[in-house]
Each structure stands twice: as C-alpha cells, then as structure tokens.
Length: 409
Image (cartoon, rainbow, N blue to C red; front, side, top):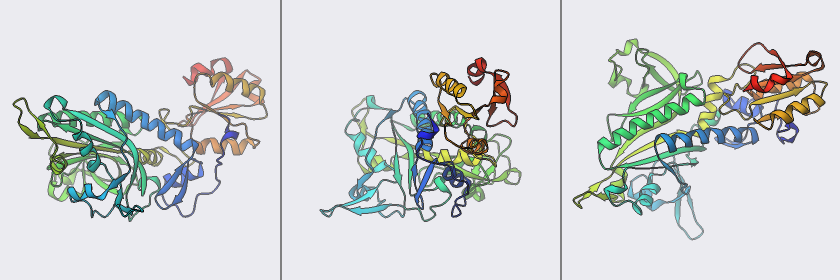
C-alpha cells in the first residue's frame, strides 16, 4: 500500500488529555481516533491489526476447541435479563423503541445464547457444544479511561460451552486455557501473560483470568515464580498461598497488570433460567452445564502497545503488524518503486511515497512500528544495497537488493 493513500496522518505531539501510553501512541500513529471517553474509531492501520488478532483467535477457537462462530445481536429485550435477574446491573445501557419496548445493549450474551441454543439442543447427542462470536460490546463504564483498555464500546470474543456433566466441562475448560495461551504467544505477549486465579463467586471456588504484566495495569496480581501462575489481589487475603505449589503469600511477587481475558464456569445458572435441558440415554431431562470464555480483542491491541512499545513508538510483532515491511525512499524513487512492486507480490508492504523529508519519514516509521524498515538511498545503492532495520533491534544492516526478499522472510 502506498502511504499517500492513507487518509490519516501521524501527529507530532501527544494528545494532552490522554494519560495512557496506548492511547497516546495509537492516536499519534493514526491507528485510532477518539470520539469520546471510552469510544474510538479504528482507522486503516488499527483495523488491520484488529482483523489479524481476530483471525488468530478464530483459528484457536475453531481448531483447538472445535467451536463454531456465530453472530448475535447487540440489542437485547429487557425481558431476557429479568429471567436471569440481571436487569439492574450497573453497566447496562438501557434504551427504548418508538413503540415503547425496553431494550439493553449487550454487555455479554448469556441471555441471548441460551435461548438460541435451546432451539437446537435437546439430546445428549447434541453435546458438548461450543459457540462463539467476535462482536461489539457495550458497558456503561464509570472509569472509561486507559485508552482502548477500558471502553464503553469495545470488541470482544465471547465463547459459550454446553456440557452434559462437570467432567466434560473440565476437559473443555483446560483446552480453553491452552487455546488462550497459544493466542498470547502468537501475538507476542505470551511471556508477559499469566494464568491468574480469581474468585469464582457463586459458581465455584475459582475462575481464571489472564493478566498481562505492565506498569500501566489497573489490576494487582501476586505472581508465583515457582509455577508461573498468579493470584488476583481481590482474593489474596483468603488464599494466602499459591493454589498450585503452596508457596506462601510473602514469597509471591506483587505486580501491576492488565486483564486481557477470563474464563469461568457458569454451572447451570443460565440454562436453568431458560429451562435448557437435555435428555440422557434413558430419556430423562437433565441440566446442562455451561462455561463462558471471554477475550478482549481491542484490549489485546492496547496491551501489546503497553507491553512492547518503546520511547519512539509501537513495536508490532509480525503476526499482527499492519504491514510486514515499510519502505522509505530517500532521494530515489525508481529503485524503491521496483523493490516495492517486487515485495508487494509476496508480503504486506507499506511504501512511503509522501513528499516528506527523510527525518520525518524515519520518525514516522518508528512511531508506526512495522517490523522491517527498508531505507533506499543513493549512498547505499552505490554498492547495490539497501539499509534494513528490524524495529525491535538497534542496528541496521546493509543487504544486497537481490537478497532482500530472503532476508525479510
């Protein structure tokens, strides 16, 4: 893609009203535009990243968990929430139709997915079942801050599983942990993200979160260096030791983190509310066990920025970068054009064809954070070379033009 075709522009200064690094850098780099507190538009560069994160999530949901993707409505009748006694939760946005109907905007989809599944599940032969969606959620956040980490409108993947018994649910729950771990590894934050024990509320002793360590985090976790899991601060007084190895609280490391995902058992709370049952081999009606598995798509994007950026801008992992290569021509366009045309056939390339000075182009390249930067200048071309620099490395290398493709691959 030619950079001149992007209708967006980078900004020289940090937006003064933004405190979080992810908001500052994403706005400056032209990835997002803030519409109001907690609500953002995703611009071409940002949308490319979102779509790549979505596709990584889809692969794990489909292949590791065997789940099926659907898309449910964001507008829900209040009557469904009354059945689950959740019509008064404080994060719900309420609205009315012209004819007087009372609706809410979906903050999660238990009230929709259970009646939906009841149309198709009636026998033990129909279970287990996992359905998921990637969809916009709405929550009336009182603390709509921290950029795209905490929004009133945000993208989320929510998966719901249905089982005949606890044993089957436990198997699926463990596979979900593996799927999530694969996702975090691929998008570059696996070594900073920990399975975290949290309160299970009325459903079980524990639920689980995945927390990414960063100074920008709003959560506090206690990390066990021995077994690599953590405990959320909200349950640490009751827990007092690592649930896996028994390491005592005073030996756990207290650190700040961002919750990027959660998984938790629902037992039969929602299936009971809508009378969702299955018939066993004897023809007896039995309760259906459920689980819920959420992951913040837009929040993951913000977490990557908080965790991997440096003083000059973003440092995107190749798996989710908007482009793989950023070509910067300096006083030479003919060779740059040829390199761009050649590489663009096999990989995603952003070509800075703007009428800007070399210094501005290089600063923008660091800010945007594409993994490979190729500088084409008369000086390097004297030796048939270009300057190639990885965004996550300090030093550039001189690479022969004919070897660019193999080097970048």
